[in-house]
Length: 390
Image (cartoon, rainbow, N blue to C red):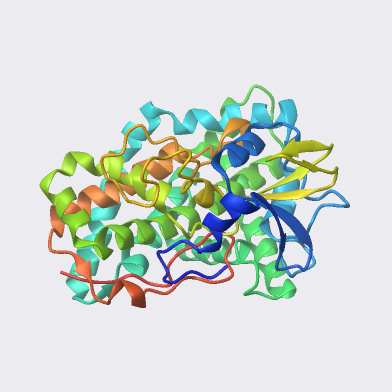
């Protein structure tokens, strides 16, 4: 669905919510899925265990135009337990690295990284691409730090992340090569951590797990954290700043009251009209959603972004209100599969905004908002670049 501008929602969302809340859509693969756009329906499906992540079922729709089905049906996705007790045990092992206490300890390091990147951008001079200078590298640096990966290998991780999340840009051979390279790297990294553990998540899983974890699970865990935590946050940094700078009143409001950083981040997450393809789910039994009975074998796409613009759930949903609270948006999903790293993503978004408000109050778009361009072909949406001046 196209939109009038890169930061605007497609006009179809409002029509679909009103007239066709369960809509048939064709995926890049050519397969058909059902698209949900209402808040209550999306929340229901994301919270309902009957809608699973078993996207490798024989009758599940393939998302991509490649044979593999992309990141949602990759070897990594099929290695980690996707449902039931196994999935919950895996989440519990990982989740202690994303607690409020951990985030507080991590925050100074993220601040230092953001200040370094902003400083380098300023030193290079205006205009600059804020996404390439700050938004893209910061989440890679943070994930690499979390996994104990050497700084020199950050560029490799950025390439693998881009490849694995692309739905149309790469050939099957290129995707296979990237997955093989990433897997081989992570296996060697896990082997090194077994020999010499450090203060990182993988070392903790190796030395602290109640039961020894096989290399396959450790490798897939490292891959999953990168894929889930890089492109999503990198693109959100660009979109958040694009939204705030495209209407000068929003940026001035934040400068006048920097305490609004937290609620501004939440509102940017809700207001984001370009998060990508949506969250896929597979239905293993007949279920009614939005007044329509969906048969077994249906693949559902949950458009959290469309749901977050639902006037039935949010007053003045079409306006960006930096003071909005509470803000029960669905940007991180809902239920037992809600985003495991949402505390980390929030920390990174808040830190970037705090640093820019403090260091570059004169920050402004270097182009008209209508000239901003969307990224095409990624499972997660974003801007190609964010040209800024100060």
